[in-house]
Image 1 (cartoon, rainbow, N blue to C red):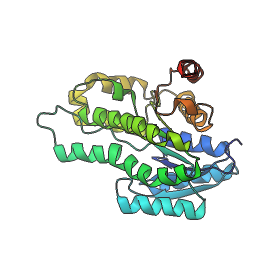
Image 2: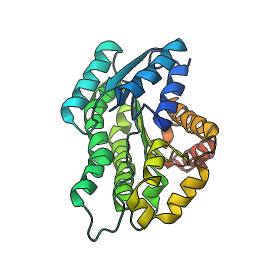
Image 3: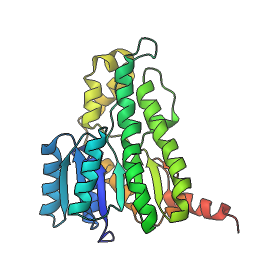
Image 4: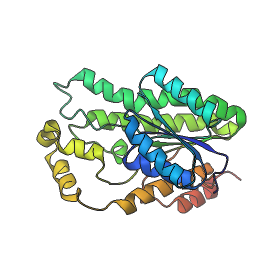
Length: 267
């Protein structure tokens, strides 16, 4: 129970990676506020946490709406206490297709979820974390942040922006002892992936990706979900605070990265 006394807020917590992360934090002792648009999803996860003896709060909110974000933070603090751990996991894959002829308003809606949402939470959560000198944040980005793939400009732009937000936020909060990380969660056929498989645009413009998802959709991804959740627990533990500002994929060895960082640090 290394996180006893911690309060975590997890967005996109109703399914997939968000659910796995929330459950893992709760098992380590964090009181967890779970946010998603579908209340039934987060209520189910909250019930799982409570059944295991943990403390959970289910919140239905639109993380791109400033009023909803403020209300979610206030409810969490009122019922669970000051937020010391934040995981930004909500995201979408759409829209798919070339930049030329793109439905720009829908493209921008994706940016609201990938950029505006974490910015609103960070703008509100980082100042009190810095005052207390305590707080850790994990932004669930994607390998797409480091790739160039045609017909995926919305997803790539949003995920790249998340990594850069983490880079800057880490620099700004380092003097206060707050740490922030970006991760690729790994390959799992989540509900978001299934939505992609069923998208006519994805089928037309990204047939290889759709085929790969289809071939893997019946796999048991329990191990991959657990590995991602453990990665978040590890980053929240404090052992890797010297790596704040970094982006990490599941293949990366945090201990090796930490050793290299410490070795290269000025004497």
